[in-house]
Image (cartoon, one colour):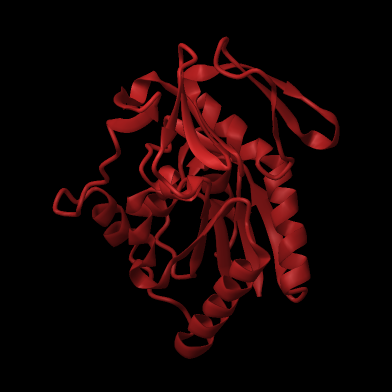
Length: 257
């Protein structure tokens, strides 16, 4: 099975190639393209592959633009760092999606699904326009995010506006910390629960213990082994936050949006 990778982060692309090789060594990677422009040129000069692994948000646009120009019949496995509600539409027409960093077990399932579809149908009839229309369909339920959290401090409840929150952290209990340094306890059991209530364009889960607001970021420094060191604006955080090698590419892309 021949595959094309559409991914603008070189490190992520290399990791995906390695993971695909481990999961299914029989898959041949024909090429890796890193932008809408280069992908359009590639499809203009080459026959379509058996399967495509495509990031959604590229440096020069979104990958749907590619599929508007070229109506392909091969299955596409979308990869993304964002778990927004509209992503559910990617299940239309047998399209699958994987959240970054890509889990090899989920990748194996997606590849098996693509193989099954190709074997049963020869080619997967893919209506990309239907997917695009679904994403923009105003009749679909809209994602709503929290505007306030009710925090507890000194036996009092305080409504805290989402824009005033610098970060959420877990230290036995779940806390939110405001841009001015106030710290409140939240009645949630996990940061996973908090994460589903936040706009992913504004908040990012940097590690297991912390979700940060983009507006609270002061600086980011590269470390050894491709890790990142995140410093928040004072008085938000008394210590620096380390971001793993796996999360570093998607975090940098999130900061630029």
